[in-house]
Image 1 (cartoon, rainbow, N blue to C red):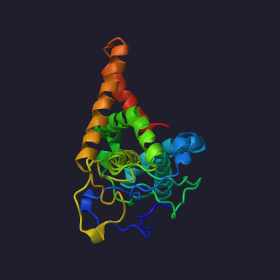
Image 2: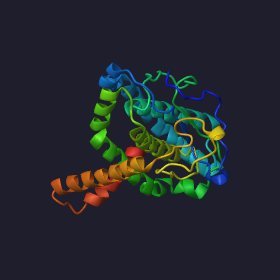
Image 3: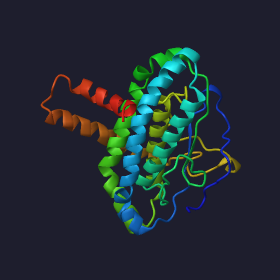
Amino acid sequence: MATGWDPRPMTSPGDGAEWLPVLDIPPPARQRRWTVLLRWLLLIPQFVVWWLLNIAAFFVMIVGWFAALFTGRLPDGIFGFLSSVLAYGTRVNASAALLVDRYPPFSFSAPQYPVQIEVRPTPLNRLAVFFRLILLIPAAIVAGLLESGWYAISWVFWLITLVLGRLPAPLYAATAAVARFSMRLRAYTYMLTPAYPKRVFGDEPVPADEVRSGTRPLLLDTTAKVLVVLFLVLGLAGHVVNASVDHGSDHDEDDFMAHTVTSWTTP
């Protein structure tokens, strides 16, 4: 198990109405090179299970949308299922992004796994629920650019980790920033939180006794922040190139937005 992970129950100090879903990942540690080499191949069964879970989550989310629209909150059963799917996908994503070395379990409940999330049942604004699909568009575009940019140079991160046997701190922080923003966006999409995704460039420093993991707080140095900006630039450049290849169709911008939002609301 990676060092530095605090397995205590997560009781993050709240930020009032601005409390955001929490992602806990241990600080960067040594990884087995053979698992780094075969990481994505080993995770294929996990990707299949996660895809199937997303299909179920899509239909459960529709039911939850109607329930939240009338009651102002998600029913406990729906909240529990969607938060479990979110946690499952976050564990798989963290492993695929080389943030942890340990293989994720095929289970909703994984209290001993080093990657944990925290979401809290919270009353929802009915108006925000009604317009959720529209409201998430800006954050979905940012997440889409971040993920596209990260994937564009992920092979460099993979090669560095394979050679060094660990993910260097700036690469870890920048990758964790993308993973956390994506997790928060999906939590917002699932109506697990009323808090809009934010803090893609990390958190403010806190006293040493409040540090809980490598991502609580998530601190990005200058190099890590530059990498996050690079992800955004590469993601945008990739979409521009794709639009050019598609012959400058009048609907390229609409297609990009529709594809980005659809990727966050459907399996």
